[in-house]
Length: 379
Image (cartoon, rainbow, N blue to C red; front, side, top):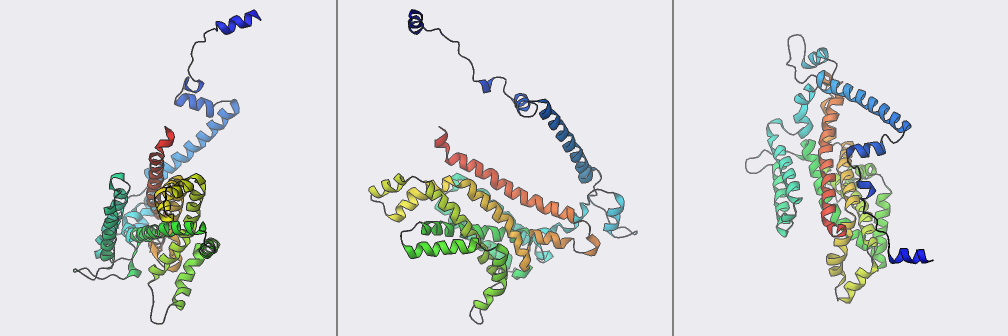
């Protein structure tokens, strides 16, 4: 008993030590802990590394060492015959020959500088909109002016520009038009639908519920077919909307329903005290939604929102089933010519890299945005 009391009165000082996870940290410690922590783990890691190295070397040899980048047509045959004869690797000459068709579709060849400017405008708008210092009301005006300029460039017919009808649009420019306009309209619509599903007014609530459940229960392909075939039958006589407009309406309705559920999840994640505090302060329903509820809810659901945006951007390729020459359809048609058949892998890789660049940029930006908006939680 006396020893215990003495130990409490005069406690033994223990030397401070570093946290275990910080001792011997670094790449080699992580590798030893996760890849080589046992004999079976080490063997599995070595086998997988060997298989990956072999596959990587074969891919590198096919894509670069044995690849044919450009072959001029000679007297012995067309360019495709020369490409097949020179090597067994990739024939990137098809990209050099068909890249303008892949990027711009059937847009008139001598006018393809116009969709090229449109693509540059879209990229510039995306970059500017991603910077916080430009998040002002003037940015919306810039978007409106830029979209009007984009429509002017694509259609033409004024200021000396040759008129180009919509069926001749295609490639990357058409994909960006469908995706950008779709997100710009579907996202605000989804916010209103999400608020409507939580409304105390039964008619508005069940109307929004019916819209979401019906649209989410139908494949996008079905909606596109209905927009292309059935929608014109419902229009008044003499009114015929453009095929692109009909497809755009179907895509907007489809993705607004999916985004609405994501936004509703963010609204339900907020504690009830947020609403009660707003009402105590005398804020109206719309003031509460705009200033308190929506900023917190949207900040919470940034990852699933961006995940839906990425899926939306890729799903625009489904418009090919109604005859629109988007990026993927242009790549598919580019090798439909008999002389170029057999080189579809190269064109699909080229189109896939373009999709990857845009989707990867959205993914990385969402991570940066989520960290910046939730920095107060990491303090």
